[in-house]
View 1 (cartoon, rainbow, N blue to C red):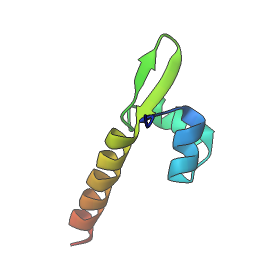
View 2 (cartoon, rainbow, N blue to C red; view 1 turned 45 degrees about the vertical axis):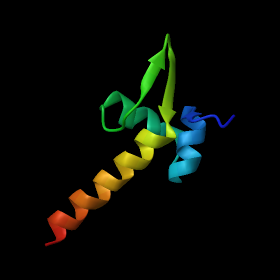
View 3 (spheres, one colour; view 1 turned 90 degrees about the vertical axis):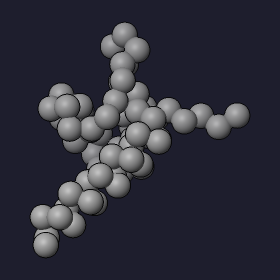
View 4 (cartoon, rainbow, N blue to C red; view 1 turned 135 degrees about the vertical axis):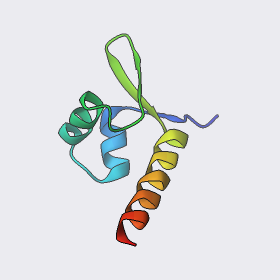
Length: 63
């Protein structure tokens, strides 16, 4: 079975940013996430959809 959830560190590695950046984005509600008590998790599906939305928004701004 494939695990579809990522920790903060795994999401940071997946996106190629520092884990502090992920914590800031979570705090500012800039990235889709969910919590289990105090732990923060991400789903690969939602992160991929968020990346796609970011790309589309950037393409619109460039036009």
